[in-house]
Length: 229
Image (cartoon, rainbow, N blue to C red; front, top):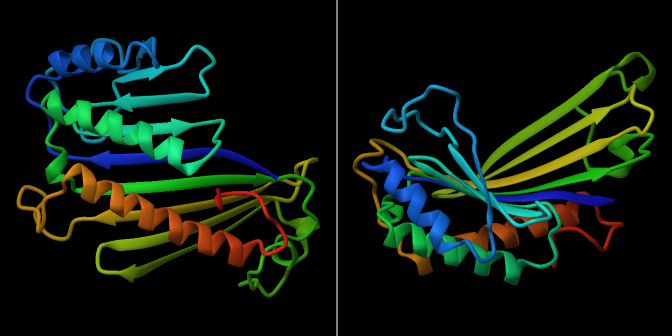
């Protein structure tokens, strides 16, 4: 079993001067994220705002941890996740500096936390997972790709998206278990129903982590690894 990636993402109103914001974020995190990469399409002016478009990536030398920014989005990605406390501390530092540099974090329109797990050499995904098959025919020899997705609203403002993908024709018999907990504003994003302090965001992330951990343990009861750290 391998935890492939952990991702935190937040959306907020577009920043008016993205070029200044990007430069300030690069300087603020140069010590731990010294490698910068411009990701936007060639020829796209920095003053053009495209919703959710990631424009810059900042990473460590080994590329195992990084954060990405756009005019209305920030994500923090860990490819070699060790523990939740370290991850959330990095998130807090990046959100704090983003807010200090002009990002309207308090008016977040969407927040998400994802744990993407990969399991190799799985003969039957529905025997491996504590999950009932929705199909009448489970003959994997004639099926190239199986995908099962379930989205539940756990409570107001808190959703859980469970996405299972199984490539039955692949030699490694890969099974991907993608657990995504998210908050999304209802109504006009320009008039949010609440404002988010950094502390409130951290509390939400902790709750989302606990929700993902609980569902991971229910879906894969035989394993002691994963998101439980």
